[in-house]
Length: 45
Image (spheres, rainbow, N blue to C red):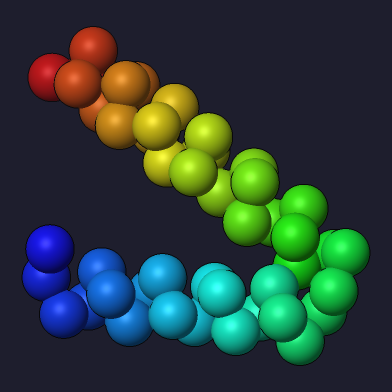
């Protein structure tokens, strides 16, 4: 994994810790959004 990817993960984790339940919801939605975006990108090529 690249450094920027790790930094993104750390930032998301810190935001989740800082925002409590709202951050936790983001952490669960973001991976699904990323997977969906990757699927759309792959299909669109």
